[in-house]
Length: 373
Ligand SMILES: [Ca+2]
Ligand SMILES: [Ca+2]
Image (cartoon, rainbow, N blue to C red; front, side):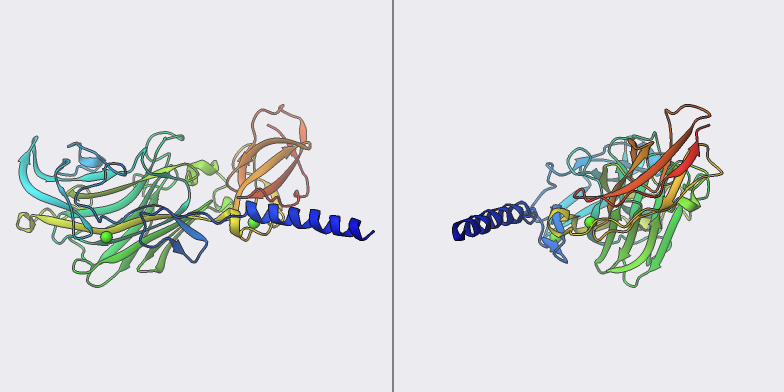
């Protein structure tokens, strides 16, 4: 009897140890001077610019004089950067090059640093003068939902020299973009933008992107299915794919050049101290299942579309399972789905459950009776 109890204890203990071992903490990359934020965010990629040249394992120069789609005036070369004393300088110059009057650089992490969700923190000092337009931003690696703006754009920071000490953050999507005048933008005044370094940050999670300057939140872009009933969720918020980082200093263009270019400001320097990418250590910290799905209902504005109140969770909901007559039919990362591949005129029973990043599931919603059209 005692042996049996002992054996049970040993088996129980072994099981406990196995479970504990599977919950190892994520390891940060060595490149980041700050490996963790609040313990749960772990550095997965970083450039501190501590070398003597741009790290081509992390960056690619985009060399062209196409004007960035904004009638910008610069020619982007692989020569307008300098890495020393712990910072990257992107230096715009007044020079005749390939039919353009200004040279500058634009660098991207495409295929070298591509991220889906996370927390991005950069520190930078702005150039001075009318005509400058520096930016730290993101574009989709694979444009799954089509060409700009359908697959989305995330502007972590933009700044135009004719309007000094004002930082801007924006998203562009099919439904929300500046061509339609519906882009989502926030701005913030900050003193000494051109003489001191400031930090720019986004926290990007499913259905939500928040923007910060110097640790202070000034923008929240949030997908809310109830406000987007007339379009498929990807048209409002296509940020469920990998994006890469871009840093550039444009000269002139539709926004940066709106008040002309002052030719006395060159060379103009956009200086970046670091840029770091963090991701949440879900495996170690997630301990709760998502809340139950409430208010499953049908859109009256988009055919065969169903939406619901988004679930909450200790570490966030990763996606939703959508069941049709008890069988898993499809998934959605946002709180809406347009049902496809069903028989017209037939009535179905729809249920939804939320799944978090380690696979914990909520209970299924109350079933919704739904006739496919
Ligand atoms: Ca640095
Ligand atoms: Ca959870």
